[in-house]
Length: 218
Ligand SMILES: C[S@@+](CC[C@H](N)C(=O)[O-])C[C@H]1O[C@@H](n2cnc3c(N)ncnc32)[C@H](O)[C@@H]1O
Image 1 (tube, rainbow, N blue to C red):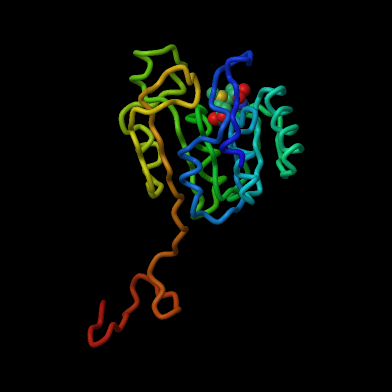
Image 2: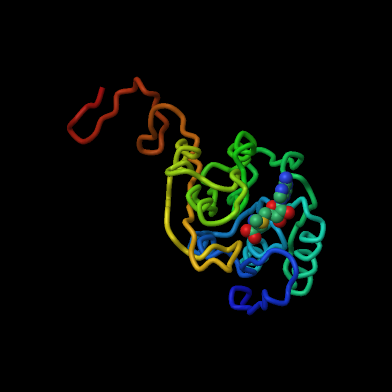
């Protein structure tokens, strides 16, 4: 299983990170039916490969050619289908109502929100994990990759919040730190609903009279 494959980080050049899939993502998709997933800034594909191995139809992209090549090679070795693209986020075509899941782990996305939200299908979810702003007191971080108190809740206030955590835990990036303050969000895009209601399978406009037992609602 991908999740349990050991990795010796000490012998590797470059950033020291958890090569296993993000644990919060694993938890979020545990009981979710696989659909179309987008992994934004996929890196070398730890999350994409996990999702693909669980039957998701995965597209991932990253600006780093070497990372994307690693993801493609690993997909080939594991025998899983993966659409891995070399692309800068600003140039990626997110499309409209395309994705059942968008993964944003350790990935700045504020500028992408106007494209990200319409690209999710109704009922689709975003899964996010990143650093809390306070972690900048403990380690050098790009401010863009940190979030203030409840900021993620505000950015997705038009979504249904399924889970939100502001917690001290082992980070996936910079794993030499035993704990950092992290924020995590799982949020679902709402169904697009017409005004009024569905009564016994029939769509009723807001002004309709509906008979409910002996009562009449006006
Ligand atoms: C901290 S890593 C996180 C990788 C992955 N999301 C994960 O959790 O394993 C950030 C990734 O973003 C990529 N990246 C940075 N700027 C980018 C941009 N403008 N467009 C697309 N990818 C970018 C980097 O190459 C790197 O792989």
